[in-house]
Length: 383
Image (cartoon, rainbow, N blue to C red; front, side):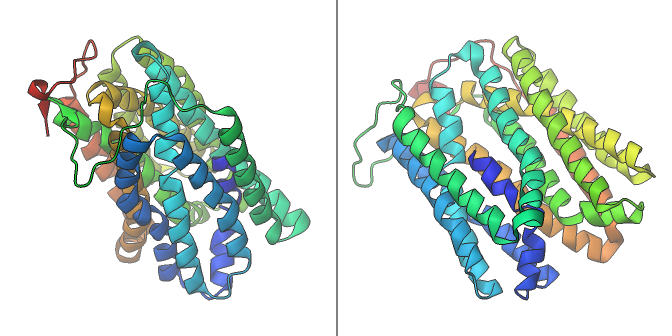
């Protein structure tokens, strides 16, 4: 529900911001601020949750989703939007890592891939449906309707979590001591490169999202695609991502997570490269479906592997870092897309994204997949 609310305004937000006087450059900054704040706040919030528990932080984050949309409605200038996006970024830092961590806290090692697959599937289902619902509300009821609906969804989500979700029994809150540092390090011995490569997978997902938001309409217009065609490509990509997360999340629980991560990331990089040769809607839709399947193939396996290769008692901090990697992609994606398009054109930007995705895919060849969950001890761990 929280993601659905966020995605409701995706088709109208650029027009809304430009109506307040935003240039394309300022629009890119406004979009990136949201992810930039998460880059700075996810790890501290995740670390704090390891000390105090997850549920209260999650509820507070969802409450910001009920306040922030109404602030958009009454914004008087474009610079006000930056402050609102800062609030939204802090709220999101209290939602996405907490939701993922609470799921991991409550499932066994044998079900983590499946759980992460369903988590990602729910996320991308909302991403696929939100723009369609938001666009319909805008056409029927005007600009304010999607924002009010977003606020209502945020409030309902907060109430449901407060009343129905329990703090995971395995996660016992720890007392906070001044200047106390965790005695256990985060990453198990020998798995630092594995952790970084898995973070690279979600960074790619974030970069592709930034590229889509920034340049997909311009790329489509060069092929003569209509706005409806562009909307179909968004739905095609998110739908493929949703289904592949569900299926390959289950596959990840049966092993061969490295194969899923490397194979999926290589397929994604190849599909981006082949976009340079696409000439019609069918070809673009097919390549975006492959892109969604590839990224959906690797994402739950990467999240499951991160849970196994890191220390249990610092899991909130760990998944704060993991989600920070995704937000890094969301921040740099629009900036890379815009700057490369200004210098080398839209097709040059596509080539740059294909190259970056290929480099990240090759880095996954160094992944080590633990056959069993290692013990988390001082002697076993690296910093």
